[in-house]
Image (cartoon, rainbow, N blue to C red):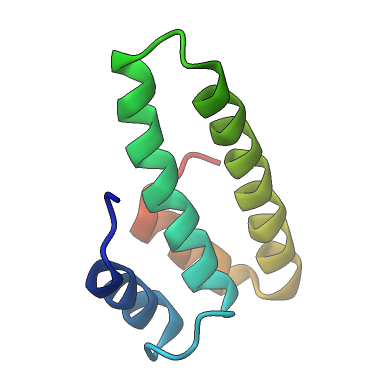
Length: 89
């Protein structure tokens, strides 16, 4: 596995304020971004991996839904998160 429990805790603590706050929208978006970045590198090497390609597209869609929710709820948190994670929008 590319992300250990400690790595996940660090990401959640940074964006979710505490390690236990895994349901926070910012923490979920940050975890999705980590997974998407990892799978993007994998797809550059393995171009014919259709299962990973579908999973990647699904994750991007799920992250977009979470970002849309955050944008509607709190635009300042949305803009800050986009800048921190360097997501194009």
